[in-house]
Length: 244
Image (cartoon, rainbow, N blue to C red):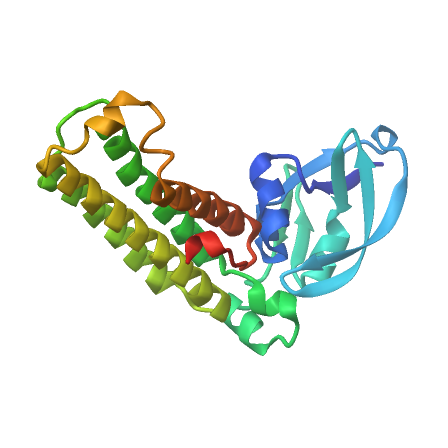
């Protein structure tokens, strides 16, 4: 006799899914495990796509396994077995916008939608791709052109538009404002460096490896960038003075 289990944190992607939102449970990895491989079965509360129920859970070797039959039942899904495998079907979750707008709890109101989280993470990556080459060029005395800078700015502006389209909840819109503030901060910082090079006033940055990084505006942008990455990764809207 064999137990059919779901490894809830078998891969890093699955860990992230559970950490950010229960509705992302569709990323679970199915596995057949022999009963003697586990130590003790416990009953835990499991939330799947907004539905909650009791499920048998086993923790062994730093991993957590959930009874697949309980998972299907809680999620109002279907489970079938064939000679060669297992078919688990989970219904689509309620949209993040509906869940957030209708929920009266603070946790629901602060939750970020999956699409916005993805777009937001892509946007801060574009902001980094814009700022890092500029900082490297200025610190090493390399010339930069407006057209070169404009290419990075347009890519980041397009990423911000994509994040704006993906913002469907109040939490998304609040986080979008912080992203917009960071974009405007990088634009202001970038314009300042372009003007400094035009006036041949960038020598001070190449004389010290940390001169540019230690400037107040640079420090503010770095702090906001790190905060945004942490917030978007958590799936919950938070605020920080560095992004204002």
